[in-house]
Image (tube, rainbow, N blue to C red; front, side, top):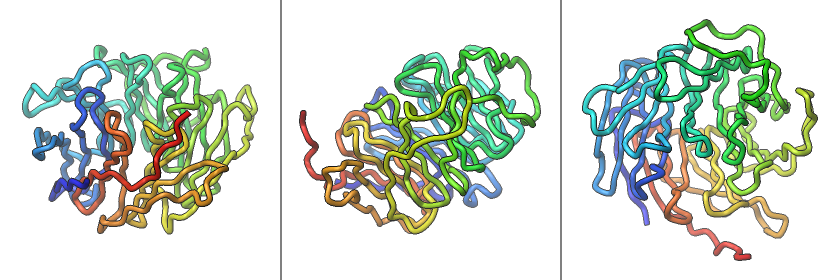
Length: 337
């Protein structure tokens, strides 16, 4: 199976499957490859584009409200975060403008479903609830760009982030050294003390993802093109720096922009890259070759990938070639316990 959705003149930046509707996707896009111009939020269904909302700046990431089937949050190039309701035309129902630079990631917790977080090139992570007009908490995560921040799918108080410094950091939002945030402020100058810190790469770390089945496993990648897997039980505590890489996967020719573990297989991960491919690989000592499949139809940078929650082994990718492509890669049958 393969479906191709075209989004011109907006280059795609991110995609997210609805947790309520099996065949609905949200897509973040930006004109002129995100350098200058408008952004657009699209929702896609089996028949094509269902809803479209335009922003003044490029839209770089999207996430669905885990408690409301019609609500989508997005991060934009002017530092603002917008919440849309698909039943309300034209304009967002809420707008937060607290970040000092581009908001490059948003993530809705699937454990404490009241909360979502954002990360920005200003180095900070912010915690929000859709009911409040200001953020609940600001974490000065790094002195450099914080490219992504994700809630743990197993422990509601843990947020993992990655930055241009090459550090993978974990923050526990219950710790007293993280002060509440009630008003906008400039980017941080002194990073907060993380619960754990890992020098995961010598280059910029662009993406990470928590494994859905193993609460202690995180994958990272970025400019160095290698997907690395970390077991956070093997790291130092109290903010110490260290870490043991439990596996690495090579194959991409250029930087990896997005990672996502499979929603149905604990050992399979997809990676989207600037080499215009999306690779599916397996992290298993019993596998003869880690590479399962390389998807190559895109004609520009592949910057997003997302596994379907409802349909096993169905993957969506998005690219700067103005397309979203949904397909089922020819993977071997999963091992049943």
